[in-house]
Image 1: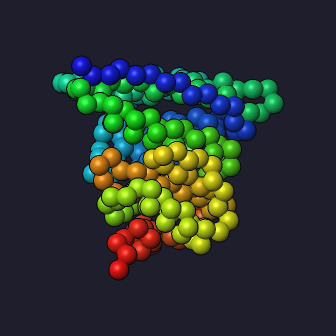
Image 2: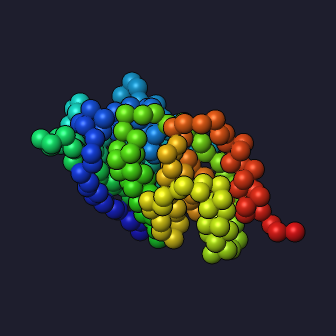
Length: 227
């Protein structure tokens, strides 16, 4: 049967049109709020996130106004598309709208759709947070796949306790049942419930020398089996 979906998010952000465009339509900009490593070139948007490496075709590219890309339709009808509309305001802020649409095939689409919705809400909130606090800067994306979790309530409790020590100045900017996002002066730190898998850390670091190896060890010590 499958499920078609479309959702629109909108926010006014304290960033210039040029800064918003940089964030949504360039590789370094997308690196600073979405996930993994991204390239925008030759009419395509290419993502590398762990072993996931999709390519989307750019379907609209009107600089400073309109940018869109589409994954293309798989044989089973699956696709995802993103569209961004940018509108400047006289007082220096910018209104940004993002439309996410797609299709999930099969009769068992509900769990995947829920995970996609909850993860997508984190990405949107991270984009707004980036434009509000780090606009014009470029982050280093750090991606870590932590231990496989069997008790998610306990995992989130442990994570909350440990973050207070690891990032004592952190400000929480987003939380739902599958994700958590916090911000410090150095970056945005995000934790996601992997679909049938591990806790995933997908951070954006603007200053400092912390590494994926550092966070791998931290996740394993925080969420690994207690002896």
